[in-house]
Image 1 (cartoon, rainbow, N blue to C red):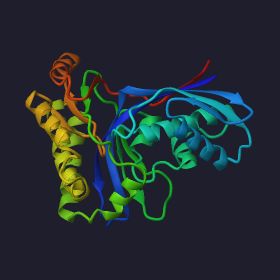
Image 2: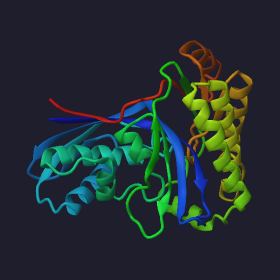
Image 3: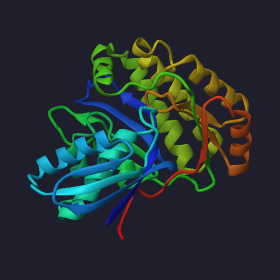
Image 4: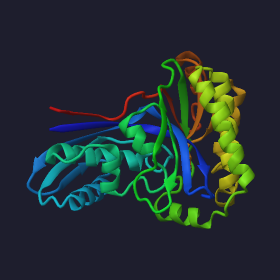
Amino acid sequence: MVVVEAPARLHLGVLDLRGDLGRRFGGLGAALQAPSLRLEARPAATLVVDGEDALRVTEFARRFLGYHRIPGGAHLSLRRGIPTHAGLGSGTQLALATARALAELFDTPRDAAGLATAVGRAQRSAIGTWAFEQGGFLLEGGRRSGRETPATLLLRRAMPEAWRAVLVIPEVEAGLSGQAEERAFRELPPPPASLVERIAHRVLMGVLPALAEADLPSFGRAVTEVQVLVGEMFAPVQGDRFASAPAAALVADMLAMGAAGAGQSSWGPAVFGLFPDEASAAAVAHRLAGRGAVVVTGFANGGARCWSE
């Protein structure tokens, strides 16, 4: 039996929806210790899938087997999943975990970019792809015009071991995905060049130096500023800087409770706050009980794990 465990991820923001320089999207994010998924795979004559989210696992497995023209099958079981359509990268992690397990069974290439291509992921953001492969904090450079491969990884750096995130998934409508997400990107007007430049400036001169110096107050402040600017880019389809009023309230409250930074992961509804240690994160998580699913987690500085039992 092959076992794959893969981490959720925070998507902290998109860099450029204009594409004036020949690359579009780009982004920054970080892998999380929790939630995570666990997928098991065994050899089988035909494709058999059980456990959580069986329909999606089946679709990803069929794509992988078709891409590699593999006539055989496998028995796949998702034992633990990441909350779906919450902004935590469940689709990409599930797709890559399925591909990685099958690659192990059928001895095909195991690099994350190749796995993503085989199952049709990383069409825009590659943060989830690189989180699966390497973990840590990630910065990617966007999709190059005319290229179908995942966006190039520009920087990967370990997150400080003590830092914690408080995740809250409020009980509101799920974040955009699939055809609704495709439509949203088609309908988004190109943001002003000045807005794109401001985001890049804060990433380069705020987020990255603060991370290199393990300066959480500066890192959190810069991430929050990026979140506000990215929210302006997506407001035409979200309705505001954040996807819902409860999400906006949670971000504001976590900042008021002492979070170094806060924001919304991808389309949400998951929001996060950044804290220097377990105790401060747990105290705020306790105060937020009842406002959704609440998780205190560290950052995963390694990618997905795969082993045989």
